[in-house]
Length: 325
Image (cartoon, rainbow, N blue to C red; front, side):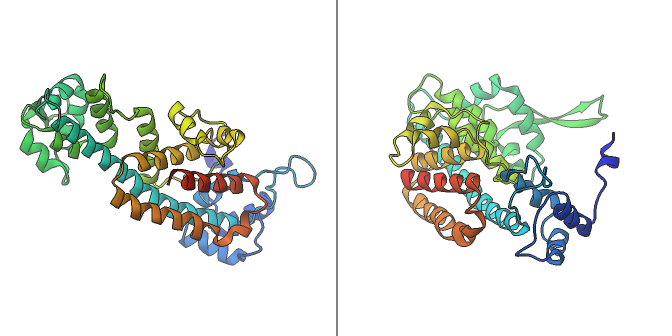
């Protein structure tokens, strides 16, 4: 059956009644009228309700299928915490990306076998899909000037589209420090892996990809903390070993929490941040991170004292911050 019939668009009033009557969500701290106003003007139902995945349902009895001890205010607070979390994590991921670019450029500059241009030529010749992305980005107001300056571009008529396309016909005049500025994080990782292949000093791309995944989630404003259940991921060996060194984290905690994808990405980000970011930047950002976790997040901790999943994930994240930072 079509979703148009099964899931018709509902008004805020209808959504509130659905949460109350069908989902068992209470309104002890926020009136139903205020909840309607919130869903109309502040946050939509799908995003707000997504955090209900962190709550269990009654499996039998008259309340079967309804959520256990879930109030609308809890969903609001989780949504607000997630917003603060996304903003800070996004900046931290960008700091890591910048630090990796600086490291790559520095290592190439100190490499007697590279002049900063040949690595670009070799990389792009073996990765034509990256060249295609650069051609598309040539019209961008942010990267277009650099691409047009350092690449030879011709307008080639495309008979199928009946229009001219920009085609990069030469890229031997682009240095690596320019290429790093115009590549996406994902394509930069291809360059990173290409250069360090067979060399020492490489941070495993499996770790960086976890940070990139988290960065992409925050950049697209996804609800990062919507599902904190474990059993969805396998941590890389380096992360397992690093967390194992934190004495106040048990084996059971480590195994459970690192199998939760959002937690694994967060742990990896904090670990890499401590490894690659400069001390000055690290000092200020870690200060912000501690303020978020140890000051802002506990403001309404009473909301979540009975939710073991949320509480244990929060406590684990705090231990990670204390252990790594």
